Length: 473
Image (tube, rainbow, N blue to C red; front, side, top):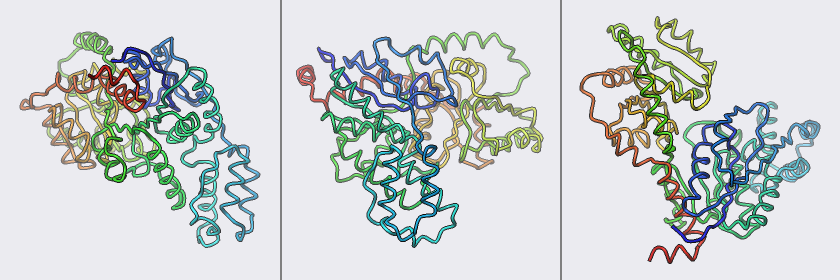
């Protein structure tokens, strides 16, 4: 710990009262960095009318923390006429020059466009609709559809830097436009930049992709620029760190550091209270209840779990699946359960505030963790599940999730999409021969306060604080 306080700027598009998944990590760091003598200000977005809010999260922000919200501008809305003109433009025009002009007039940042794009759109034999979507993305959504906040965010961020004598910029993503904001602030202010990748960016195994090869090349170049300009790059799993080290093998190895997600230590007492209250609920003659606390979308398909529950019903094993959170209507989950004959064993509930979710977690018998198609990422809910000391059914590929579950023996692993594997894992989960979980060890490993101390060590190192060297002697 140092003897004097330094000031840092956190750039995070999502921050309380926004209730998106990534805010918990950023809020945790914001709260506990002061214990390591780092006072931080936060640059974030102004929630729009469609944002899901949790005011209880906002109450946890330290009163001494300056939080500046910047409104997201969506230049595409103001540029519809411009887009229509582009669609009618002579294909012999210089496409790269047209893109730069449109982005600049729309208030978007003008980054260098790969030279391969210049004058090549006339050669792309694409349907008009697909070409239009690609053009809109290139104009207004590189690296993502949040880039419209960049110009104002950089301007406001520099004001914070000068006002609060900021000595370091920390930018967390996704959305990855936050990294561009942090990079530009650090570059103009001449101070170190620390990047925090909560998810992979250009090498994401699954999820939304860019709509064209040009966009993919462009975004890959942006990632490389950010990583090369950073004094340190934080990854939230060992597997993701290894991916970055391999991909950027020409950069210093020590630039890349793993700091995993974790849990807020003060919620231990709340969890203990909720568990005590839950023991007073009726326990006899009821099925084993599994809870998935979070969103289901894209590859996070719950239907194989329903199939497994139907299989278990035929064996007179009663299991109920509770889904609390957004569920993609395309799964048609309750109708699917009815078709499989287990309509009364599948419950779908809308999102609830964080505290209500934890109360529900205390009342069930076990958890479902869906992490398909990627070995690099760990859903943040895993770390809160740990505190409830209940078995976890992890449906995943070999990687970060399976490593944690197996190392600490805190649940069972099933192959993604494999109904027989899921059925077997549930039977193992509720059977009498379960392994002895190492709950104390896993809780110590992912304590959020200790993890924040590790982040402060990175800040000390890259900012070359004089007190740091003295304190380590």
